[in-house]
Image (cartoon, rainbow over all chains, first blue to last red):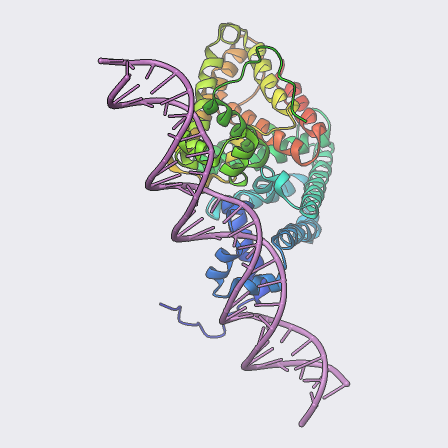
Length: 197
Length: 197
DNA sequence: CAGCTTACTTACTAATTAGTAAGTAGTTTT
DNA sequence: AAAACTACTTACTAATTAGTAAGTAAGCTG
């Protein structure tokens, strides 16, 4: 019943495999719905091996959000994102959410942690706040430039519109989970309809 | 340290007290973050007393969502809601979310359960789908009439706009939890700005 | 007033949880 | 080649979890 090892298959180190699996479980089931046992069983190691890399679940959770924050900064600063015109930058953002949808309708990190927020360790809460703040600031800038250059259209402040749009996107993935992909597509279609000049 | 009993204080029966407390814990901490022990301790009864009223946590969760669905239908059909012009109906909806915000920044039922959705018992999932569907249909109708009578303004179909707005409101309460009340007010302000003709 | 029903408590079980301490095999450093 | 370090496993604990079974006191019912 073991998978035949493909030649020269790249297997990341255990620490990364733990993070990757924990991330999937977090986005598919929520932070309070997976345990070190679940991780260990699926990774083929003992629970204590996970404690070795992440002494407590708080540490694991914090590492998870911290990694996502690093990814956001890296993605945002990537030439193929940073050098795009605003409308294309917005499309690149939508593609990220669409990718979540395509991966078994995973919600986004924010949407996964917001409901359980008060049960999370303080460092994890802090990382999530930073994550959401930086993402919102980035989108506000994109929207501001987009409106100034005439490719995007909206009323109100870029900051308010950015907060509204990101909130809607996070929520749209949640609705997709509860129903199916349709409402997500409907909501994103509505966003495009309103925003694209 | 006990509260002095006011004269003729109305104390609901245990079943209702369980539901009320479970609802608070659900909206403040998430479904997988409270136990029968938590409920029992705070209610001053033994965990088995809760099992008497709700044999399993699945039963309790399902009862919780079912009650909320009954409340939605009752609220929607209330003369003081049903007889309002569309714009006022929309304001009445916003008042419900604002009330959540005022109660210790509780998220809404949908926002609380969406992330953990796959860990929920099937009957609870079904109830939540119905709840969300009926609320969306109600708002779509409100929006349709509002646009037809000139008091509300939006592009696209009423159904799409309703899905988008409700998703945004659910998400706005989550953002308020992660940060503070400000982003909720900002997002709702943006909604009003766009929607009110 | 006998018997049934309601609303519990007491006392328990089996499973699962996060977390720890000690040991060990293999690798790297000195 | 000795020492130290890395990445684990084995074996454990104490707490908590959902859930059950049996008992009981109070009230209602025929």
